[in-house]
Image (tube, rainbow, N blue to C red; front, side, top):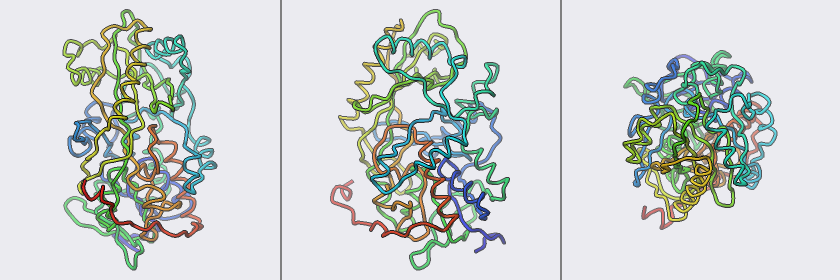
Amino acid sequence: MKENGQDYDAIVVGTGPGGASVALELTKAGKKVLILERGKNPRLRGTVIDYILYQCIPFRSMLFTPQLLGMVRGLITGGSSVFYYGTCFPVPIEMLKKYGVDISSQVKEVRKDLPIAPLRDDIMGPKAKLIEKSALELGYDWKRLEKFMYQDRWTREQKHGEYYYGDPNDVKWNARLYIDEAVSLGAVLVTGAKVKKVLEQNDTAVGVEFSRKGRKVKAYAPKVVIAAGGIGSPVILRKSGISRAGYDYFFDPLVSVVGYVKNIPDEKEIPMSGGILLEEEGYVMTDMALPRTLNSLFAFSAFRFHRIFSHKKRVRIMIKAKDTLGGRLTDRGGVRKRLIKEDMQKLERGYRRAKEILERAGAKGIYQTWKLAAHPGGTIRIGDLVDSNLETRIKNCHVCDCSVIPEAWGLPPTLTLLALGKRLGQHLADNKIVQKKKPAEKKRNKTLAKK
C-alpha cells in the first residue's frame, strides 16, 4: 500500500512511549513503518518557551476540566515524555494478567535496555534529602525512586531544562530517542500530521486519513497502531465508528504542598527523587522541586502573591491520587470529568500527611496549590474496546498508549507503556498475534446516555 510513492508495512500514530516502542520494534524487525505525529519535532533547548509552546497552549496541549483542573499533554515528537520527570514506577503485572496481558518478559527487556536506577546520593538535592530525612523520622517508608536517567551524564552545571522544559543534553531518557533510532533504521517520521480517522474495508484497517498543512492525506498500510494518548486516541476511534471510546476514565489528580525553610542551600534539584506509595489510602507522595518560573506560577494559582518570588527557601511535596473512573470526552477531546467526594478525600489525607512531614522539616507558611490532572487513561480499556492483543473491533487496528489501561491506577505509566509497546511490536512483526474474539461494542447504558 502506498502514500507519496512509499510502501509501508505499518502506520503508527503518535510518538509517546507506547507508539515509539511499537515503531522501534517493527523497524528493528525490518518492517517499513510510517510514524505520524501531530506536533513538531524541534531541537530541544531546555527553555520555558519550549514548555509553553508544546505543553501549555490552552485548549490544545492544556485542557481544563469543569472544576478547572489543568491537564497538560505534550504535542511534540516524544509526547509528554519530553517534559515528564523521568520517574519509573512498577508495572501492574498482576492487574494486567487478569485481562490476559502478560508483559513480564518485556518489562525485563526494557529494564535491560534503558538506564533505570534510583538516584545516586551525590545527585540528590538538599531539599529532597531534607524531606526524606523528615519522612523517615516520622516512620514513613520513604524510598529513593527509580529514574529514567543517564546519571553519568548529569552535572550541576547543566541548565534546569533537562527535567522541566525538555532535555537538550539527553540526560533524561524520553521517547524521542526511540523515534530517532527508528528513523535511523529506516522509519519515516511525518510531523504536523493530525490523524482524523482509521480507514477500513470489510471491517479491516487499511490505513489512516490525516490533515497536514491544510491538505487532506490518506496513508495506507495493512497494520495500524493508534498511540495518540489517552485523549487523542479515543477521539480518533470515535470518528472511525467506535462510538463508546472516551467514557469512564481516570486522570490521576494531583496537588502539591509547599512550605518555606530558612537557610537551605539553593542547589540544583531533580523532582521526584524519593517518595512513598500509600496504596491502601490510594495515593503516592514524592518530593517535587520546581524551577523558579513554575514555582511562581503555582504560588500565583494558590493566591500566595507574597510568595511568588520566594524561590530559594521553598520545599514541596506532591500528592498524586488514584481517582475513580468516570466522566466522558467530547468529540473534540474536551475533558468532562469531575472529582468525586472520595477522590477529594484522598488528596486531603495526603495534604495532612505532607504537611506533617514539612513541619517536621522546619517548614513554615505551609499551603497547598491548585489541583492538576496528569496522564489520562482508561478511555479504550483492555477487555472492553480492545482485546488482550490491544486490537479493536476493526481488524488490524490496535491501540497502544495509556488509554488501554483497564483499571484506575494512579501512577506514572511510562515503563508499562514501553513494555506494552514492545509486546505489541514483537507480535505484529512476527505475525503471531493470537486471534481472539473481539470485544463487542456495546450500546451505551443509561448513565452514559445522560452525560
